[in-house]
Image (tube, rainbow, N blue to C red; front, side, top):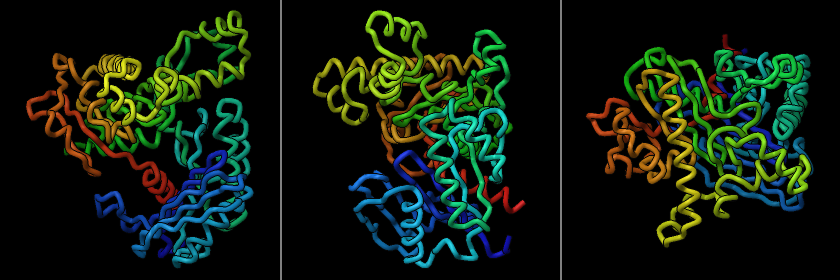
Length: 411
């Protein structure tokens, strides 16, 4: 790799979308601001539709966001459109300054415990994991193959959502079902949002002025998808999502933890088939199933107007959060910090306040004035006397992917 090649393009390919960021890794380490090293960001959505949309912001030049609409047939066309936007800003994919392309891959199973340079064998293994990640891995593979075709000479690196959680001990990762059946079908708890949990747990340690190895952190990644993790000395020892991203916390449209027998009951009594149950639990449950809204801002507005369904949905959401905070406090034994992150965790002060309320005997408390502050910077929202720090730490999964990618190709 050229000594001048310090840029990494990060691609997050969904089934009908591509999120991307171009970062200069020579800038990111020396600055704490969220825009440090970021040269361009963008999103292509509704790929395959007549109403496809590309939104591109050239941060390097300070230019305004550019938006275009029109049909984008597939991921190859989407990435070519992205490349054209970058070229227009003097940041083209043919630049000798581009060191690698980093890809978010949702499921890496047990084989991939770290970022990995992609070759055909790696792609084949990602494809073998499609049955346990049918909504995500196929889109990730499509993005990888398209990027390889555009820059076959460039290192392509997979950064796996599951990798951070592969440090879980077997007693936390195993389900209590027949071992032979579980092994034959790869049934175990893998966890997700790993790049976010890795980044936030490390940044929380920095906020406390300690090394990650010295800190035990409960990370609460609360977005439309939500997960919790128990991180002991920089290593994940438990996490709320399991075989799929359905297990765990109440989410925007996912149920989270549920008695498995509910699925049998719905088949026998309601006559629902597997696909209908899947859609119910993944897309019609959680907050939207409880009250018809999955936007926490709208739910809070409805609560303020006296809406009882919204209040019940919020209370169920908070109750589940408290259960995981309590459970992971027991798992860790000693907790140094609880860190809130992602869209809801970073922006919904009432969620943070309610989740910690009543946990004073566990050493946790929230200072109302600190909690009300809005900022893009990591910050403490607990009072000075609290035994356990409560923090808000904005996540940066793209930066984490870029850093892992750059470290691997620059080793």
